[in-house]
Image 1: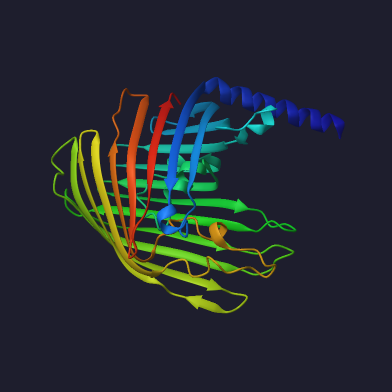
Image 2: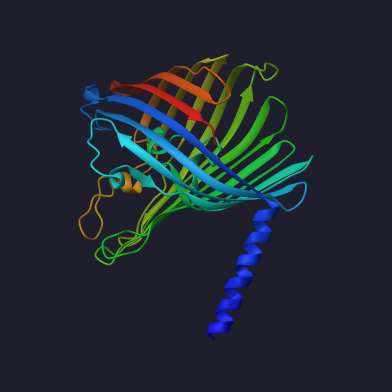
Length: 357
């Protein structure tokens, strides 16, 4: 038996050596700085609290890349996310280790199509769809860096689509089982006209101490027209979306089917942009203030999108986002949120991304 195990280990070492001999080792780093100030005293902090999100994140990755053929490559990647929250004291390295991305990536490309498959804990930036903030809020994108699960992306001609799984919670005594599936697709019917969809399918299950399941699913169907599609550095577009939701508290047999619509107008010239999103919906967060079977508030654990979709809502964003170099981007933006009550609050954001991955 011992001789057999030694033979197996020896064969694995030879296989790994042969594999590594065919590929190349790579390493890379990135830095992301975020300052996001929320001022919502005007609406008595009833939607989201007044607070400042302020941190710096350094990501370092190590990987091995090898080619199966001229069109097919594989990557095996291990990394670390270090996050320093501004205004906090760091006493040990464990205080700033936020996550450990580790994933396998397969990428196929030819002159007609491309296909990407990823398994493991992978960077959120791989998810490239243009989702409504009802499905995925800016705060979620800012602060949740990696997804745990799988990603599939496909593009051919004027059609592209993606499917992503994020397993956010493992069932435990008090820990909830939670996972979210994201789906996006876009088809350019004409150079200026595109049709598509975006979906978020969220399963919020129970724990040993709090049994029960709540489904929280959103679907967005859209049509988009870009009046400046011939310009390389400009955009003047309108995007009209229908929004629908299926939400059910299975324990209480409570089903909600809220729906609505959204219109996004965007004007971009070089590094300057103006964006306005106007929506009118039913309450898309009907269980937000409810509790589970153990008395825990659902709140932000159940709803990962924007908290403003409760009737009339308007978002105006003015931004400046110059690309200073191939590796360095900054973005400065002012965001104003409006409701039936008038101005609900505002945000001032600054972010810097230095990416040498």
